[in-house]
Image (cartoon, rainbow over all chains, first blue to last red; front, side):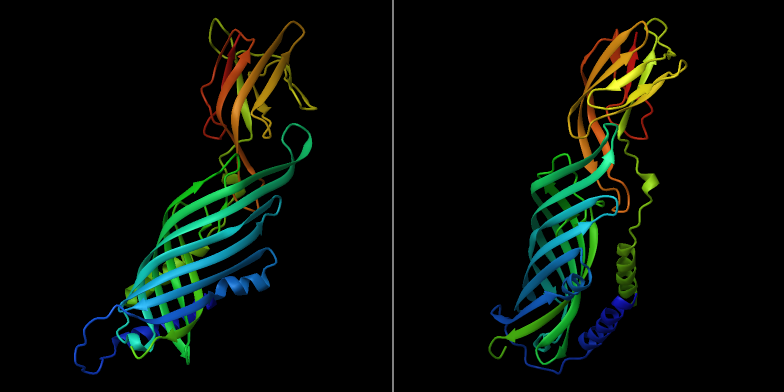
Length: 219
Length: 145
C-alpha cells in the first residue's frame, strides 16, 4: 500500500489545483499549436531493474501537448525470467501511441489530469525449459517461440504534478483490453512485454513516471 | 471524486492479487484409455503390459484394470502404444498437438494435449470421446475388442 501513498497524495493535490477558480481572463481563441513536450522514464520499471536480478526493463514516454489534448508515445524494452521448477525467459520491446484529454484547468502549470486511449504493440520471444520425467525418462525439455507479436488497446487515467522547476512526477493507470497474440507454437506465452501476464484477457497496470517539461514559446 | 479515488485504489489492489494454487490447474499431461468389450460395449477387465514407444517404462496392469493412464511425448506429435498379454498383442498410434503453458511460475509446467486422434490401431474398434487431456474429461480413448 505504501507505494500508492505518493500517488494518492499527488492525486489529492491535483484535484485541489484543478478545482481552484481560475482568475477571470479574456477568452482566447483555441490554438492547437504544440505548447510543451514532456519526456520521461517509467520509474517503477527502472527501479525494479536495479532491485530484481530477474527483471530488466526501461520505458520512455514522450508527451506533446496541444491545447487540451496530449499526443503520447511510450517505448520500452523488457527482459524477464520467471519460475522455480521451470525456467521461463521472455524478452522483447513494445510501444504505445495514443492521446489524452487533459482535464486540469490550468494547463500552463504543466499539471495533467487526463483520460486517454492507446494502441500498443509488442515484438518479443519466449522460452520455457524444464527437466522432468513425462513418462519417457528424465529429460530436459526446451520450448521456444522466436517471433511473437502482440497488440492491445488501453484506456489510461493519468496524473502528472510539478515537483520542482520543470520536473514532473505522476502515475498512469491502465485498463488493457482486446489483446491478440500471434506466432505462438506449442508454448503458450505467459508474459507480453508492456502488457504483463496473459492469464487474463484484460488487465490493469500501474506506472509511475518521472518527467522533464520542455515548454515551447509563451503559450 | 472520493468515489473515483476509492475505485482507483481498489483497482490497484486487485491488480496485485495474483497467486495461484498449483492444484487447481485442470490440464493433464497424460491420456486415459479405457478397455471395452466389443459385444456388450461395457468396460472390460484386462491384464495388459503396456509400453509407450520411446519410454523406458512398462506399465503392468492388474487383472481387473478397466483403464490405463498413458504418457504422451510432449516433444513429438505422435506416440505409439503396445498392449501385450499372454494371448494377444495390440497397437495404437495416437496423434495430438501438445500445448505447454505456465499455470504459475511456482508450479510445474502445465501440459495438455489437444486434438487427440488415431493414426492407426489394431483393436477391433476405437472411439475418442475426449480429444483434450484435462480433469474435466474422464476418458479420452475407448478401445473395443
